[in-house]
Length: 117
Image 1 (cartoon, helix red, strand yellow):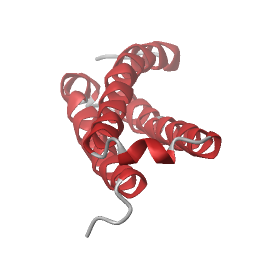
Image 2 (cartoon, helix red, strand yellow):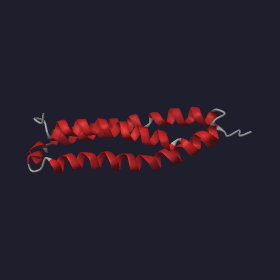
Image 3 (spheres, helix red, strand yellow):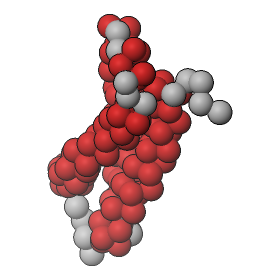
Image 4 (spheres, one colour):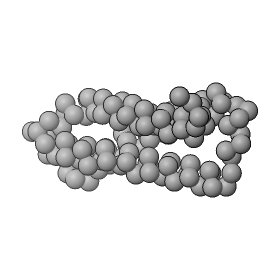
C-alpha cells in the first residue's frame, strides 16, 4: 500500500504542474500572437500602456486559475487512486489548457478584431 506523505505528494505535484505551466503559458501566448498577427497592421493600434496592463492582468488571472489543478492533484494523490491518477493527470492538463485556449481565443479575438461579425 502506498503511503506517500503530503510533502511527497506536494513535491510530485509541483514537479508535474510547473513543467506543464510552461506549455500552458506558451500555448496561450501563441494564440494571442496569432490573433495579433492576423489583424495586423490594424491590431497595432490597440498597443497602449493600458492594453499592456490589461494583458498582464489576464495573464496573471490565467495563471491563478491554473493553480486550481493543485487542489485536484493533491486530493487525488491522497486517495487510493494515486497511481492511476499520476499516469493520467496529463489529461487534466490537456483539458484545462484546451478550456483556457478557448477563452483566450475569444478574448484575443475581441481585443484584436473588435468589429468582426
